[in-house]
Image 1 (cartoon, one colour):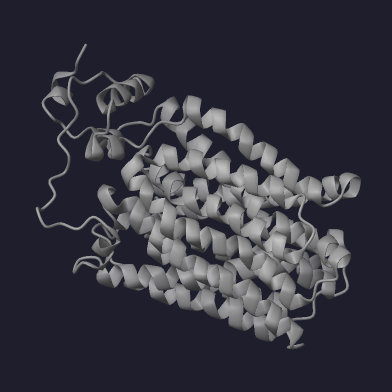
Image 2: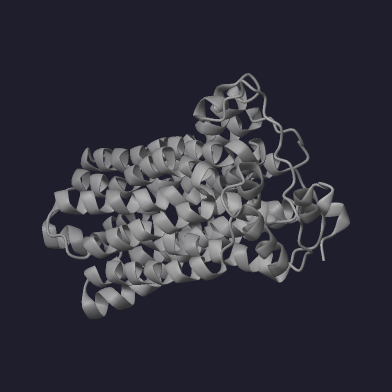
Length: 443
């Protein structure tokens, strides 16, 4: 039976935003979370295998920095060049393409035998990861109620450090029994298993179906409505009106309305990713260089990601009660303090691990920026806006690990590169986010 209110063109998305979340909506967000968790494992697998690869291949710090940054360069390329295509072919299709690229890239990485091959394989894997992140964020935002959207996006991005956390534990077992290539074979297998799950259970973005109305859009839309326990419609709501001369390409991000917040958002992403990927890539190696074992170095990386995951949930929970941008600023500022204590104060092993955990505050603040990006742009340019913000941020993600390799090779003191590449950028990100103006500032 067709619902009369929906048939007359009532805003279905607004009804979803205001109503309770169905089990199907939670399942869709859960699938996105699982994919993002595997992405965290895939991109940081190199950090957990670095000690063995460095020893086996005799890599210098600068070479290791390039290997770390290769995957991040691929993520930038995927976010800038491929992710925006999701606004035209659908977010679900982009996720499937990305998973296929990741599966192939991880499998190839297990069999490389030179730095050049490793860099190419890691860059290719990164393209797949960068391709899907904006689509995961968009689908999560659209299938969340307004009340729980910040929490849902925080939980989505919590998957990344959870994957990195579990990856550290898995890496210890796999490396000890099978050697470092087994870590990448495991990652390839897990990504491949997600492809049929996406085909069977992940819905297309409702915003895409309504705004673009591709072939069979009404059939797909009603199928999603049925799985959400909602009545069918006999026609789709009218798309949001677009001015005749409106530009929905990347240049729309530089329109009068979005120019200032776009620049501020890009700067925030850049600074946060300089800090985050320096910490994620180099913390295990820095701990080993400080005299601890390879397993203790991996454990420090595990604690960093565990701290990030817990702090993300905390930020998402608090964001229903306090202004999101203020929370982001608080988390980033606190992380800068924890980073400097970790880097500059001589600590026994136990306290070093505690502060590695507390540095996860930076990761939580970074995830809050994703929520801001998803709220800033309308549906028709959301994948483009979020994808380009992530892509520009990846420049910082590339720069951080590479610059650390140069600074460590120059034998600078630890506190100097932690200040320049982690604490300082986190503080600058906290300042820059205040210039991103949203229509509804209480979020």
